Image (cartoon, rainbow, N blue to C red):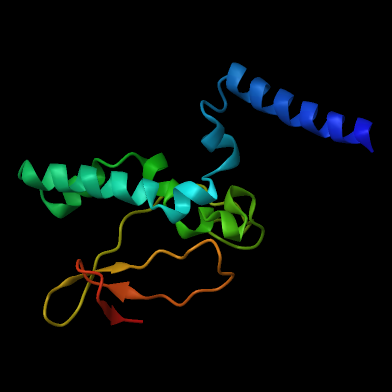
Length: 144
């Protein structure tokens, strides 16, 4: 048992080191996906909001502001990368039908009939399923 545990740890270490050494993965997050802590704290969502708001303050349109977000940053905030759902190693159809999401297609904007912008509430990693809940900027549920 001990030798197989050591072998598993060494295999993981060599995989990480090898992919980073040869440049196919630059950081552990590219290899393993977001951690539960990053997901539950909204780490990527906060960074995206910060960058979008900065672009809007510079006078860019909402579409132009979202176009400045790096694809990887938007992709890590995608629900399919939620660690509770298996992260990047999830099986089943996602974007390509083979269970592996390959990229970010864009940002959807939701508005209610009064024109308030609505945001999808994050799914905590604790839950296996979670309803789609739309909240406004004050955190008030406006639709589900």
